[in-house]
Length: 83
Image 1 (cartoon, rainbow, N blue to C red):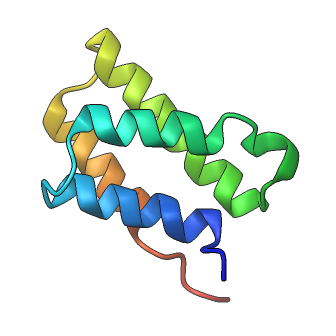
Image 2: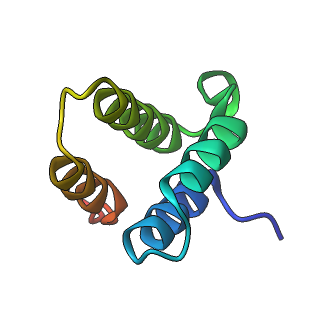
């Protein structure tokens, strides 16, 4: 069974936040796994992928600190409650 992309992204965020993978490993995985996300993925996965990519870009440009980056990822990794 294939893991849904949203679950896979959240799993990789959790691995990064718990220092199981490096920032470079996370970035490499995210770019590879989501390069065409807008065309084929569920909207929740698309939003999560784009938000994570945007946070990575802001971190790499120096627009946000490592602490702020990690706080954002923690928010992204939390499942959205059903309504």
